[in-house]
Image 1 (cartoon, helix red, strand yellow):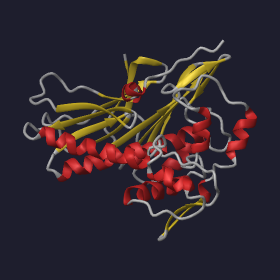
Image 2: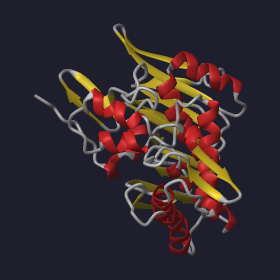
Image 3: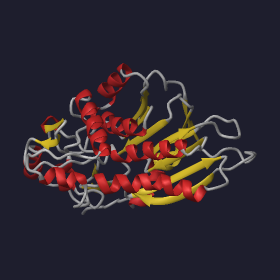
Image 4: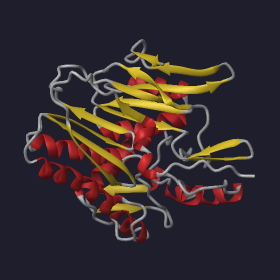
Length: 336
């Protein structure tokens, strides 16, 4: 019997990262607005703003709407759909789609395919968050032939998929890109400090009026009511990938949405991976890649990259086990 444990998309923001609320003595609370965008709950908090906030929020959320129209795998009128339908011909993308694809391919090469933007055939087959049973091995093997980031070619003439039938899925990069674009929009409009959270991706900027440092908590991967408090590590973008965000249980096994592009099955070894980086898009991509790579390979690679840190959790017979890169070690603690 299949026991299904799904999460509504609008609740994803609460599953991965939580902003620790400042003390009640804070002289000025942020102005906040929540909306559904990109299939998740997006929260924007602006500090020190009391005028024209309606226009500021509209400008910021417009960035999420723009990314959705261009990069959603669910929209037949998106640019991704046009690239896939071109059957080997080049399509000239918008600057936004080009930027996300170029950065996605950069990290795909750096991670040796642990992150792969051409995983769309696999994600369609598994069909999270609506999945309730695992596909059979033959079906997985058949779609793996269409998963290979090296078959995406980008030059001055545009973007071309070298193999007909491939599908692009930017679910692990477009959301972070939208966060980054919204932050830049608000900064350009003169907002001195704020925070945006979108389905577990966070980016903040400026100094809070209370003078306290930004503090964050990472959700315990097996207890939604418990958290690990993490000091500010000096990187303004944070993202978490976990096996508790979208999953189902079948025959005593958990099947989650973070798929290994090489095997076609949910990645095993870790249950949570959090990454700090300079941009939300990089943190979003790398949390997925490290989850797939596992603790040893993932942390080894992160230590080689400047301005990136990571904290991962695995489940052992003796309980939860954590490992971290040098910039995070000793800077997190469990909060009862």
